[in-house]
Image 1 (cartoon, rainbow over the protein chains, first blue to last red):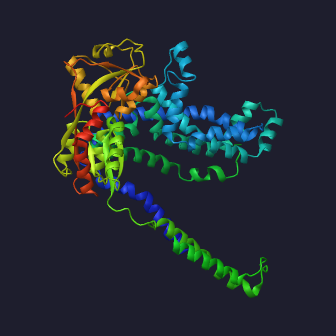
Image 2: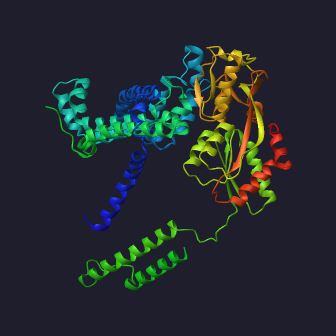
Image 3: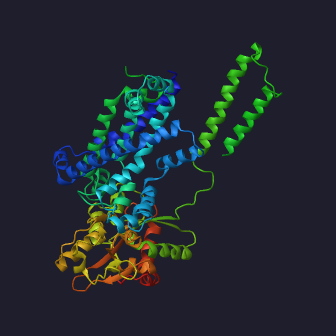
Amino acid sequence: MPVPALVLAIVAVAFFALPLVGLIWRAPWSNAWTYLTADTALTALRLSMVTSLCSTALSIVFGVPLAWLLARVDFPGRGAVRALCLLSMVLPPVVGGVALFFALGRRGLVGQYLDQWFGITLPFTTAGVVVAQTFVAMPFLVITVEAALRQLDPRLEDASRTLGASRWYTFRRVTLPAIRPALTAGAVLAWARALGEFGATITFAGNFPGTTQTMPLAVYLSLETNPEEAIVLALLMIAISFIVLVGLRDRWFGAVGRPAQVAA
Amino acid sequence: MPLAITLTVVGAAGWRQLYPSRRFPPNSSRLTNVRNVRTKFIAAAMIVALLAASCGADDAPPVGDATLTVFAAASLTAAFTELGDAFTAENPDAEVTVNFAGSSDLVAQITEGAPVDVFASADLANMAKLTDAGLDGDDPVVFATNLAEIIVEPGNPTGITGVADLADGDLVVVQCAPEVPCGSYAEQIFANAGVAVTPSSFEENVKAVVTKVVLGEADAGIVYRTDVIAAGDDADGVTIGDDVNVVAEYPIVSIADAPNPVGARAFVDFVLSPAGQEILAAFGFGSP
């Protein structure tokens, strides 16, 4: 590798490593276990895990059909629809939270009917957290899966259909295995994004320990009272994310570029 | 910037010298090697020059020590914006920038080394964090007081009459997080009144509580009287009885090792002066 490019790459690695090193350097290792097993930490962690997994599940259930629609079906205005669905990726999360407020809040466009007719309120509930996280995380899954679907050779599916398989069977046994790397990568991206969501959560769902206080919120608030606790919680989140990312390894990068492979 | 322009012009002139005509001789063995080396050099020089010019300091003459950075509690938003304008009107060289957030948030930033000249807190506890860390330039002085009040939607649709009504489980009540001054005042008020209130959310600053009520998401919140006044027609207030209410004391201090110590002291003096006190009173603050 040419030396100037290598230098720039090393600077980039240092740029990412430095904040982590800074955290580790300031971490109160003697008190770390106390903070990790404290009520706030465990409650926030459990809530974060539950909500992020729910958001990921919702993203998969709704995101894969959406990706299919955007990749396979040619309809007028497809570009605009795609931009609309991916908008929350570029929106600042707080803006997303405010927008969700005006749509699904107690006086919101749709929210007021949810409240009046069904008695469902989303703000200040765990369901609201899941909604906010799904709003920001789903585009990551959609974009990854759509790319994979585009690259998938439709003749494989055609062959399956001509051999007598139903559409659902084809989807289940031919398409899904072929896009599995992309689907995995997209799901992990969505999960990571949902886990780290702060702005939309605190704006839309609020902050209450046990109901809506996820790990990022807990870290932010403890930074004001007890920076040591905040550092320990932050390191915990980093450790979890790191383990997941390292565990994926090559599947991460091979997801979108590799030609599709069909399960026998 | 002038350096970038010079280099770009020189680079362009050099380019023109090499290639007087528009059409480059394709793959001409005579010129290819030379062209490749010179092209890369000129392009690299131009890019480096532009980057250096844009990333470096701007070439306008420095403004000097006339900028003043103030960190103020969220409840002081309207008052300190006007105080900043009035201070600039009296001292035309000064440029006042105010950062509003929850007092606990601001103290955390200052203790981590944010370059600040003046800090105005909404309670003495958060100011104590600053003095304990040894970051106060002078002794903090209380410059204003405030009273807590219950904020409700216009017309008070839920019919709240006092703190005791907030214990109703059907109401959506929000308050500030306990480490933020208005949150700790709220907890004191609930303790004084002997009611157990379970809020739906702990917000990071008092303005977030106001927003939730104004937008109709929450039925009630504990904020300051000045916030209810600032909300105008968008919200109504329900007074809290004097027997349970707390008086919020707002201290102000200049920061030790401030970037602009002279300006800091001048601003603190201005806030404590009759002119400053008049502005604060106009927004509903009480005298210290």
